[in-house]
Length: 109
Length: 118
Image 1: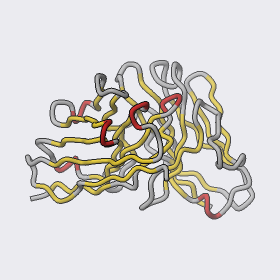
Image 2: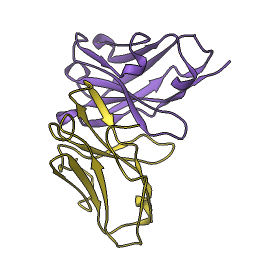
Image 3: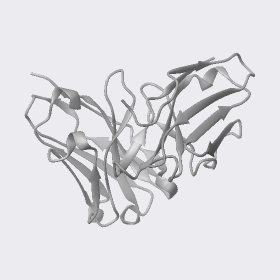
């Protein structure tokens, strides 16, 4: 059981906006920056968001991240069929002295 | 080309050992933290271990402490994971990744499959 809680699934129709939440605590999200990863089965995960809301070069601005207190969120706007994937939040946990991932959210379009 | 290439996976019996490797190219390997992340069948991503630039600082997830050892050879631009006393629950795809600003894993290997079974 992960220390970061994500909904197991989220869905939307093409063009819609979907938001995924990641609930943590003071020892992880409350103190450290959050990253989001996109993972297609059979492929390597891809960094989508780092430092809570920053996008690496090449990531479309349809993907946005935010954080408030011990909750982080990933929003996907203008949903597309090829956004169907698993999305994971991650951050360092000071109590565990390790990186922790959420259990992942499967997005269906 | 900037890339990470994982290798060394395979079938191993419970209690056995395996050594995973990750070859880096296209960036200054000796200046970056590196990590191993795994994904068990039907499960999510799980951080396994990380190591600092010169190998003097290492962290492990509790479930592998005392059994796995992360190491690196900067002269060969290579990262390793020595897996001893493996268990069925260690069955997974293992990815090496580069750690960037804010603990972001900004580059990943393609993964190598480890199966623990008798």
